[in-house]
Each structure stands twice: as C-alpha cells, then as structure tokens.
Length: 466
Ligand code: GLC
Image (cartoon, rainbow, N blue to C red):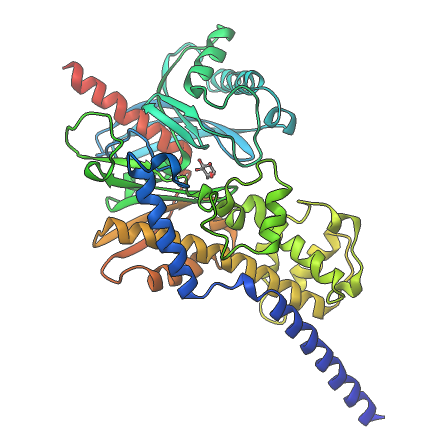
C-alpha cells in the first residue's frame, strides 16, 4: 500500500516535471539573454540617431520629438498653477502651489468613458473642459485666471512650448479629428466655448517630461524620465549639438529635453528577431496594428493580455487546466496586468494569489497549473523589465554622464513586486559601468511636472519682461 502511494507520488512529480518542462521549453522565447538585449540596444541607438538627424528623421522608427523644455527647475519657481493630466485610463485635474523647493497640491480623478476614448475629439475636449470647470468650482478658483500646464501623454510634434500636434493616438484612444491638430488649440477652444472659466495655457508636456521635471525638482542629477504604465516611453536631456532638427534659439543652456517615443521602436521591423507569436497576435487584433510594437511587448495595457494568450495556447496544447478554458479566459483583455503582480507576489511554492486570480477568471486549476501560471507571468514581466532596461542603458550610454538619476513613474513599475529590482540589476549589466545611475520613483510626476514646466515658463516670461 505504502509502496503504491509512493509510486503515485513519484508519478505525479514526474508528470508535473514533464508538464513544467514542456511549458518551460515552449515559453523560452520570452527569455532574452544579454547578447539579445545588447542587440536590441544597438538597434535602438541607431533609431535614436536617425530620429535626431535631419535627413533620417522621416524614416526613423523612434521620432525623438523636441519638447522645447530647456532646463530643469532651479528652485526659485513659485505660484499657484493648474495642471491637466490626460494619458492613461484616468484624467486628472490638479491645483498646485509651488514655493521654491516646497509644493502642495490637491487633485481629482475623473474617468474617461470608453465612448469618449473612441468618440470625437470635440467630445473629448468638451469633457476635459467640463471636468476642469467642476474642479475650479469645487476648489473655489473659478474667478481666477491661473496658469496651466497640460500633460498630454501621446506622441506629439511640438512647435513650441504651447503648440503640440498629435501625430497618432496610442493606448486605446482613437478620437476622430485630433490627429495632426494642435491639442492646446483644441483645449483653448473647448474652454472658450463654455464661457465660465478662464485659464492661461503655459505649457504642454508629455508625462515623461513631467516625470523628469518633478524628479529634477528634488534631485539635481535627474536627466531621464521614464514611464512604465499603460504605455511606455522615456525622455532625456540632450545637447543641442546632437539635435539637427533644433529650430529654436541657441541661447544657454544649449540643451533640450527629447521625448523619444520609444514605444514605436520596431514599427519598421527592427524587433522582428525578438517578437513572438503572442506579440504578433496582440498587434494584429489591436486598434493600431503595426504601431507601438515595443510598447506592446512591455506596457501595462498589454502585459496581462500577453499572459492570457500564452495560457490559452498552452491549454489548447493540452499542457494546462486539463484543456478547459472559461469564457472569461477566452475573452481578450479580461486577464488584467495587475493579476501578474498579484500572482508573482506569492512566495515560492505558495499559490494563494494564483488561486484567487483563477477564481476571478472562472478557472479551475491544480497547484501544478498555478506553478506554470507563475512561471508564465514571471517570463512575461521579466521580459518587459529587461527590454525597458536595455532601452534605459542605451540612453545612459548615449548621455555619458558619470551619474544620472532616472525618474520613473507608471503602474507597472510602481506595483509589480520585482520590476524595480529586475531593472536595477539588468541596467547595471547593460550600461557602461562608468555611467552610474539610480532609479527614483516619481511622486505624482506627470501632473506636478506640467505645473513645474508652467512655473519655469512664467518665471522666464517675468525675467524677460524686466
Ligand atoms: C505612449 C504615448 C507616450 C507616453 C507613453 C506613457 O507610449 O505615446 O506619449 O509617454 O505612452 O504614458
């Protein structure tokens, strides 16, 4: 009898290891060794240089947009500012008091319903103006004309600090009539139409720029802003001599923040050597096929869906869940990226969170299934962290600064239990050891950063007037 139990256990262990071995082998292309990451980095550097060059800009995958933000805050900024932050699943309005190094702020979050995300541009900007008016009412500033910083986190070709043409929507937005238009103009028009509020748009910034500015406000070494959230992107301070397309003045400081828009890396084929069948499936079923291919391998909008597609494939191959898939599991985007963080937060050999996610997905699974689920989550999230690390290392190696602080924001970086540690280790392996770095979590970077850019603009305007 004992002999039989023992045999049964052995058989189970054997089955588990063959199942896991098979799954391990089938998902191995999600693991990117350093030589592959170095190749990614070399290709990205090529695209960065193409994006910055006059002749090559047009054909570059990565557009390296000039932001017209030329300096980080110097600590003498002050005043009361409004900020709008549009770019993810929520829209925020902020009221910020800046007094040198100190600041205080209040903010409200407003949802952007799906029908607005996919509706007309006019409706989107009316909604924004409506939220702004409600906010100003609530915080009793409706009678004031306050300077405003607008964080608009989509790829824009800027023509100045207050002029930004949307190149294309990303991250699930697709409002008609906005691409190619100046979003500041659209905002001003929507506000004017209401006649109940008055504001002064001082700057439009990307969330990466906001993050860089708000981290630089606290840490003088910050020159790189990074987002790993719904989307992914980075900006950094570049010397004017490297920006062939620079059309502004040549005054000091001879530098400008470049919004890389690295989410589009791979859009002309550079990443085919690392893209898997799951990446291709996600892309072709998306709202913007062929676009934002690097982003689709990394960001929070897609990571959960990547895991779901791997799981569906493995179940179909008879390797998981006894091949039974619930309706929820078959539905695109129902497996949320936050589930990955949850599942990976269980210690080794514990499957509490994994089981609770399975319940949410109406799935039935054994501990063995949970072990495989954990492996898949870890592979997808580590790949994302490693790709971002390769991209950060590319910028550090390009900037050649002895020490750079990287300001980081975004839900994936913030909430995934291993993302920070994975990045710290991998950047250290891929960046030249001469160029030291640290990763600093940004506190409310994007909104506060927009107010800081507005504050710097107000300060410079005042200085010019005197
Ligand atoms: C997308 C946008 C980019 C933004 C990033 C992070 O990649 O195109 O502008 O910075 O998401 O929110």
